[in-house]
Length: 140
Image 1 (tube, one colour):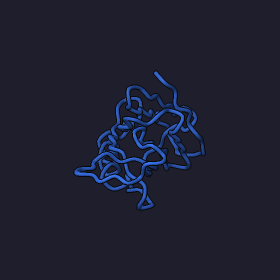
Image 2: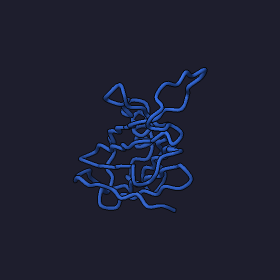
Image 3: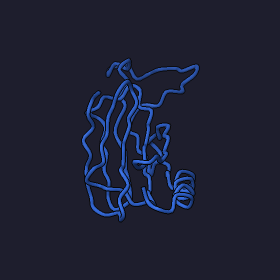
Image 4: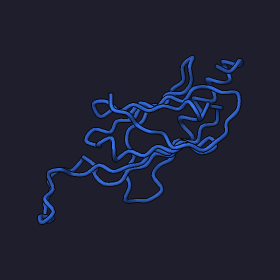
């Protein structure tokens, strides 16, 4: 972990409230996301119930983490599109979360696990931020 712990945690706090951007396109939804730091690095936890691992994409490019994908509605038959909802809260379709990480992480050691609808991305600390990388999600 970087040496200046107090200002480092303040950076993480600011990063969470100011740099987790909403989706760029109106048709996309944004999954609930937690972002926190520990002694090993940053951790991103994302609720993706109903999403299959193969439909999750994670990219990291020079301090920006992008998580995107799609959640299909398994109950919607292709020939039946006329539904009259009384209440509709579950979002389907494309999703995206863009996080600008203002703290240095080791892009070569980023890992992601997906288990029971929860995505966990670990971004270990590093002295400087650099590089572009796509991260493979593994099922636990």
